[in-house]
Image 1: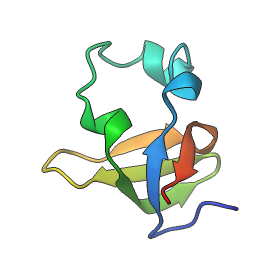
Image 2: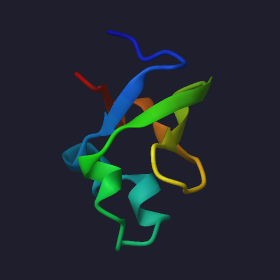
Image 3: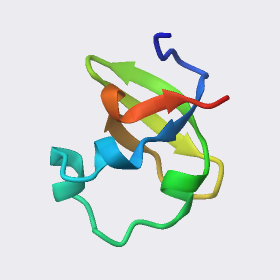
Image 4: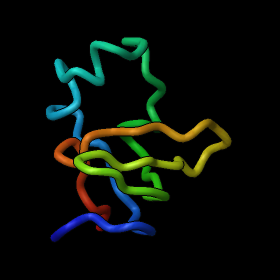
Length: 70
């Protein structure tokens, strides 16, 4: 299933670790990144802008690191 704007998604830890995005980020990511869900607010190429359901800034992550939340 293709990810689209408005979808609730989860970050797949195994796909995020050792990725270019992980190397460019602080290694001490908060638990909500992997345990919670975020909403896709924008798509651009192979990336999605994610707004987590906690009061934090949005982040851009590769689509292959995300899965639609069930």
